[in-house]
Length: 346
Image 1: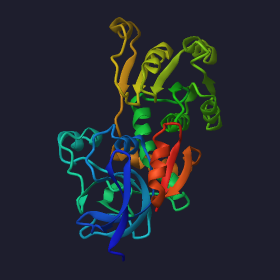
Image 2 (image 1 turned 90 degrees about the vertical axis):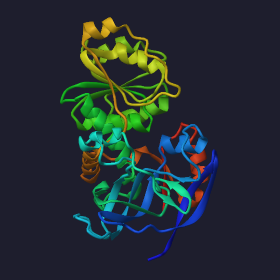
Image 3 (image 1 turned 90 degrees about the horizontal axis):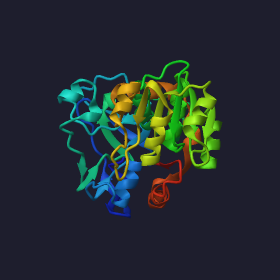
Image 4 (image 1 turned 180 degrees about the horizontal axis):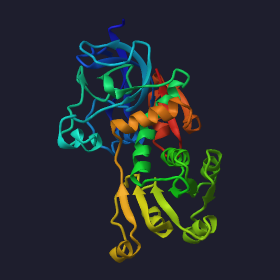
């Protein structure tokens, strides 16, 4: 096996280079993954542009798929060399109170990030990664690596769907039809819900309908409160999922949610603004305001199963694929926020 690997390294805002780094060795309980695809999430975009203050030089990327290359010593796993996997890339300790409860996304200690030859990071944009075997979720070999890489963002979506308790026959409004908005559409539909999408862009509204949304709303031209009720037999929605972090979306969500329904703040806001809401409205209507940040291992298992079994397809969410060598151009394009997922292949 080769002793070095190519890795995409961010050295400063908007600066990126390909370096040769040593291939890491799996330790006890770990597996070595030959990575095949990594999707460029908003996290990588924000580190690349300097909005998110992560250390440089860094090799990032956390929406990853690949092949099991080697199994470390004392590794109790059903995985075999050659298995296709999606990765639940960790940056949590696995030992604190939250981790012990299965709330790894709220780890209070955070595990130290790996470091190779002075480069720190998650190493999703490298040819190889070492990871705990339980974080490598087996994926059907029928699923292309590019599509399997979106297992992690789907897992984040599933946590939100569970949190607002989407049930058969519910009506769910998704605000925003970007990548994460459309993943919410797919997940809500797979849960048996009727889905309405509120989105300004006409092309994205069309995309939402193509992926199974039952109806779409243009919030710039329609009264969202009235329109949801027209589309839903005079009733508001049991759940509203906000996938765009801004004041207009926040205000619209409160107008569209039914009594005792839930508003899910799925997207973070940059910058964040205080919510303009009368507490008596919450008291009188019984609505619940909640949020999600990331995923846990259970969510990853569920996402891997949904993709492997063909219940949810991520194919339509991939804007384009590019080789790792062209990662800088891909990051420049992904950072304009007008694309669906751009995936790097290795």
